[in-house]
Length: 168
Image (cartoon, rainbow, N blue to C red; front, side):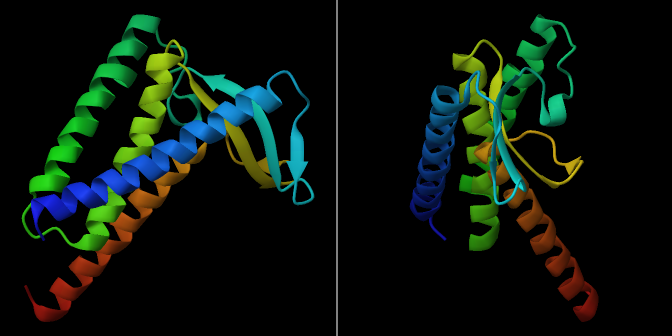
């Protein structure tokens, strides 16, 4: 697979995911801010805006602002750049792994854009659940990250399984 093809796939996934993520956050902020939660599908999906200064499930939200800026800004930005370089130049990377990695990078970039433009906070607005059992609040960038990581885990387990069968 050529580097140009990889860059094209990465660009397409990043533009699509970041575009949908940032658009949905803009709509959520303009329509849901200071409003009662909106329930869809008989309450299974709930929409309500929060500004998350932490990471996944608000982990690290209590850290000092400077530490959050370094960890969630510079470290994440560096990790995303390293991931992009890997996806463009890694030998033997399959198309499925490229797309899965691109989802992770795109989701991370969507949240990083929020942190840069929104004083270190990420807009989250979706929860899913039944009754009192609910997920944490998340956004479309988080969905892309989780989908990409899940795909990479499945792809990695398939590779290990096939290597075990062939004795490699």
